[in-house]
Image 1 (tube, helix red, strand yellow):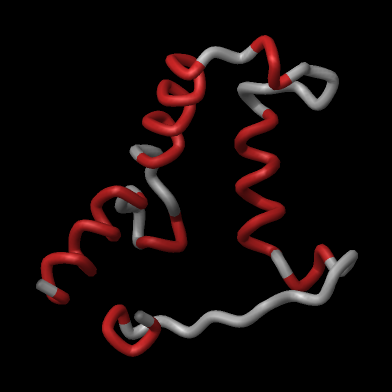
Image 2 (cartoon, rainbow, N blue to C red; image 1 turned 45 degrees about the vertical axis):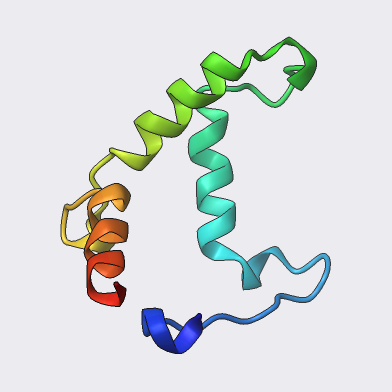
Length: 80
């Protein structure tokens, strides 16, 4: 999959958040919608899908101000 998508990946060491910058950033974005004190038992599937749609359609500087959905679809179009 790595070569087909032309991306690199690695496995971070446990308890090393500095090795997971993108993941930690996404956690921060999610926390804009779901506060840290929230119980996930109280969050509906509809709410999760709503948050997912907002985050996947949010413009990102790292993608030259395109959305993650757009970038994903661009990569998938070249693989098929």
